[in-house]
Length: 554
Ligand code: ATP
Ligand code: MG
Ligand code: MG
Image: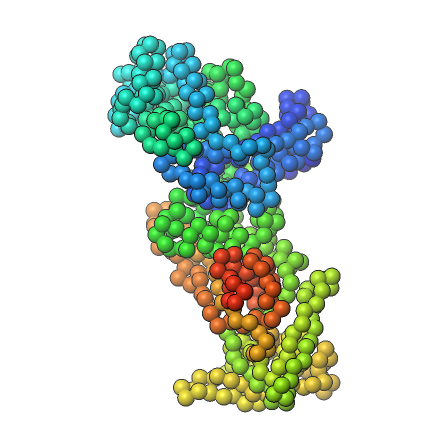
């Protein structure tokens, strides 16, 4: 059922109630020239989400197509086509019927172009690209008619046929709509409909050497698929008159309604495939699915859940107001989802050995702890031995004010276990602390000491039973809140500390069975997931998704 949550849904409900449509058909039309990013997620949630809602709305059916907008073969590839399908599915959506390609319609698009020529609404222009650009004029200056604008229908039909037959070189001619070179809307100043590109297409091979332009292809593809509402971002508002003009010239086709909404922008992030591709091509990140990338594949590898991304898109909402969303809202959404779903575990990121001298050499006690505050998620076994590891950062000999963790002579609770006291600090020749020695208070398992208060709690693992792990701490890729703004090279504000690798970490043995993409809360550290590509049972690799609380800049 559709709820009137935003102006688009309100309008769609009115179209159903008013009898204009009894079936709502939307489409998500990516160009396969890169991986999908968080901005695309907004469009996916809107188009697929609206169709799902329409399907259960009284008096309506609903469907959403996935259509590859593949009119620029030189920038497109099968890798991107595959990745886009994977990402849409991963987000939890499915398209109606077969995958569509704009290239499926190349023959029809060609035939409609011939129809436009016959009706005197399109002509072949043979000016150079520079002449065409100049002839278009500017916002304050009308364009000038091309000297070829007056060509006869016969001449245009013949030239267009010869363009199609491959008789001319790239750039020699284009097909233009004949609209109005003085229009206040530059998009209506005889826009180009077709250009010659002698290049093999990933779907149609060498069948074509003329390719239709996006602005020509999109309305006709929408119409051919019976799209009712063609939802796009605000920069296409100025193109809507062309969208409508084209369909008005082709009365045999239905006429979908284009509606624009504002793009998703995110601070500390770039959301442009072109820029993301530069990061990949220049190896500033390790591929499109690098966990620092705002791509769906990167967010997935970072440990984001589909639910969290959908919740984020919901919170951002749909409007016509351009704004910049705060990346901490995205982080809030994943924290909120993982708080209730991710099992707890202990991982020591920077191990420091502690010998518990009041335990026997072969001491092996198994403590049970809940996997999650929600007891339904069961228990885990925590072996406790004479030698354990704690995190180096949980010990200091020079405590700052308010320090609650371990100091020489001080006490802390080992999380899920006993209170321990540090009695001795062992150093190597260089003076570095390499080991602590201390004792457990064996009366304190699940009980407070009766005669004193112990405030600090630290996590730990058994030295002999824990597993080695590599832990990758990710941070924001850009240190500037607006890396995308202005002329400065967006790559100049890459955060040099966006990845820190802790190769010597130790994790509790219950994680031996962890599988790729499984997510955990490492107690006191944050949310982590098993890396999809690099983790093996012999050497676990965990990616930090997000810290436990918003600590950026603090
Ligand atoms: P980019 O500028 O990153 O290349 P694009 O708009 O060229 O994006 P497309 O593949 O054409 O990428 O996008 C497919 C759909 O996703 C389009 O309908 C587009 O409007 C929408 N989309 C792309 N980026 C955003 C965004 N930041 N916010 C909302 N929708 C977006
Ligand atoms: Mg586009
Ligand atoms: Mg683009």
